[in-house]
Image 1 (tube, rainbow over the protein chains, first blue to last red):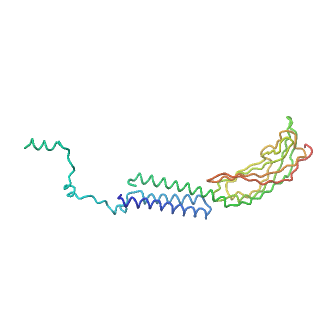
Image 2 (cartoon, rainbow over the protein chains, first blue to last red):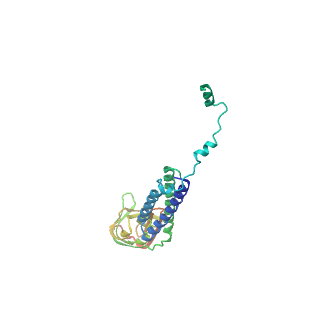
Length: 93
Length: 167
């Protein structure tokens, strides 16, 4: 999941749970049934987890841009002063 | 939110926090219900009335208890415990309460009831004070909600009197 996907997943999760909670409470109160509230909310939690927990392709639309390999070669990692490879090359030649 | 486990954890924690909030609001919503229960008890017969060998008075009654407790039930009510107590005053104690009958009402459908019974629990005074005694029959109830705190109330029915003589 990319950065944008993580943000969307979190916001979607919070929004969906709050909406389902409000709907479940109103449904339970109007119908006078505590069980209805619990069922609606449980269904909401299951649906929300199916949507926001797995790593769907939907969350990977903004892949991170890494530096090109070429660009990395132009700015090599600084080497320690007495490094192995130098000695090896000198002894071979 | 970078991994499956992290997202599952965040969702579950948030979901249960909201559930606790919903339950709290549900128990607050009980306060908007203003119940108007009614009750009537008739003492149909004094079956017997005697002094036990140890000196305490005991009386056996046949009762006709009818009550309509439907208005106590809200969407957040699990059950109602109801009991009928005889209450009277003696020289020694301001208030004596003797439970005569009780019951559990599991749902609104059973909340309007009528029962013809002798006293389920023995009506014994700690002493010999029952002859000619005026007493109240009080219907107490405890409402047990699905979430939130239990609350109770009562209806006092007065004007009952035990006979002057043992029988």
